[in-house]
Amino acid sequence: MQERIRNFSIIAHVDHGKSTLADRILQMTHAVSVREMREQFLDSLELERERGITIKASAVRLFYQAKDGQTYTFNLIDTPGHVDFGYEVSRALAAVEGVLLVVDASQGVEAQTIANFYLALEHEHTIIPVVNKIDLPSARPEEVALEIEEVLGLPTEEVVFASGKTGQGVEDILEAIVRRIPAPAGQPTNPLKALIFDSIFDAYQGVIPYVRVFEGAVTRGDKIRIWSTGKEFEVDKVGVFRPGALEPVARLGPGEVGWITANIREIGEAQVGDTITLADNPTDGPYPGFKPAKPVVFAGMYPVDTQDYNRLRDALEKLKLNDAALSFEPETSEALGFGFRCGFLGLLHAEIVQERLEREFNLNLISTAPSVIYRVLTTDGEMIEVHNPSMLPDPATIAALEEPYVRLTVYTPEEYVGPIMQLLQEKRGRMDHMNYLGTRERAKRVELVYQVPFGEILYDFHDRLKSLSRGYASMDYEQAGYQEGDLVKVQILVNEEPVDALAFIAHRDKAYTIGRSIVDKLAEVIPRQQFAVPIQAAIGGKIIARATVKALRKDVLAKCYGGDVSRKKKLLEKQKEGKKRLKAIGSVEVPQEAFLAVLSAG
Ligand code: GDP
Ligand code: MG
Image (tube, rainbow, N blue to C red; front, side, top):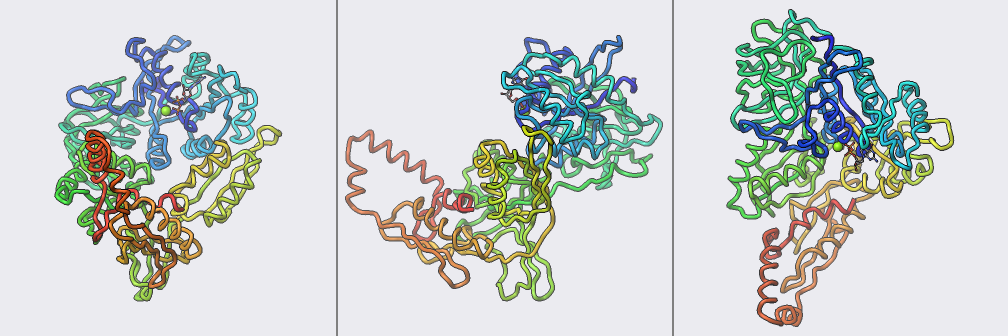
């Protein structure tokens, strides 16, 4: 019954208790027995295997017997938490009619509370504010409810008070879902219009798109068409999400949330945000705003052992099958040999990919420092995208060099505004605006909105923001186009040879400091050789910083290798292990750390 379906998401700032509350809701709707229950049920990636399907439980269908005596079908759709995957959050929200906006009763409103609130507002969703963790001794529920009213404009009367931990108030939440969130609209007789809000890849069944049906219905044997690619597939099965299982059903109708199998072999063929319709009776238009996920950060990945090149390519191809945002193309480095330039959504995404390559495919990799995409306008009037700093064309041919910007929002208690503005200035940020939110003394929060070069906040910005605000400030950002900058390429020379994999692009005013810090770091991490090794940073032909790796002294060697046999053996083994991540550059061995030195030099 369509009128008794409720589709909703839970949104919150990180750690405000989203997963714990979801657990409690699962339990109270008897979706999982007490025996099966374990903490953060929806979070576990490798949740269950059934017929070879690994289920990412990003959606679940629940049944709730409400106080009005009726049984309601709830579809709870989980959203990814990290800003790298913000695009998926927005698509997940598109699949529902309402949200629970969870706010920690002691922390109050934070940056992602606001960012998520605006996303929900854009979709014109019903928003149920939940003040959570009211069991905490430090909880100040009434104040936080007022803060929600003042900052977000949601009246205090609408706030539900709860504790995901003790279960207090959770029934009130379930009743609010029934009463306040509208049943989905849509006509079963209309042509199919289904939004892909997530997907998984299964080795046997291929891509399994997770869909929200807006109009029409889909069933086994239907010929479906993916809107943006025009590709057509025959539906094998459709189904819904039950905790820990993909449960087949006869048909998915309007307002329903479920999955489709249709022997789709690559995730690029059914991307999140795209629309599925019927080949013979297509809908008049797609769900609006689909843009394929696009990498914004690039890094080189090289096998430590050159013989692993083909294995690395195979591994990247396999990963790409279930990660549409990952891109890669072959790249050659003088220093590192044959490898790949890989594109990612952000640093977290890059880390995840490297870890999966190493763990799941047993590869040993050297990665270069992640870099943003620069744009060069050449004197010939051509526009080139530069994904690798060492590939920046000759400065004489560059008419303009542009860097990507983000629109950064920082949300902080008033007392930290000074130091945060200083940090933002150091990062070459320009203020868009500043809002004082809240009128009472204790809830005085400030929202700072800045335009900042993406490259400046890539590495250590978040850590520094947290440390100078004692953890109270929080941030969010979105890509905001390109602007010209006074940028230079800095080369690093090891033993007088420029090392392409260490080159980086920086603002002219900062090139000296960063170069200085990198050569010092390199001098520290590059093991001593039999001879002294000069390390230099240079812009064009001009050396801007230098340091030296001192030559190894004979007596140091002697000292090291003295002692008993077992200790010596251990030492040798340790060295061998360490060697795995060394790359010989000329006659100098350079460790992985060195290639990431720029990360700590920002
Ligand atoms: P998420 O990041 O929003 O998913 O938050 P989690 O559900 O993972 O919770 C973050 C932390 O807060 C965990 O240590 C939880 O045990 C704790 N927590 C969550 N809900 C409550 C609650 O209602 N009361 C208390 N005291 N702690 C809670
Ligand atoms: Mg969580």
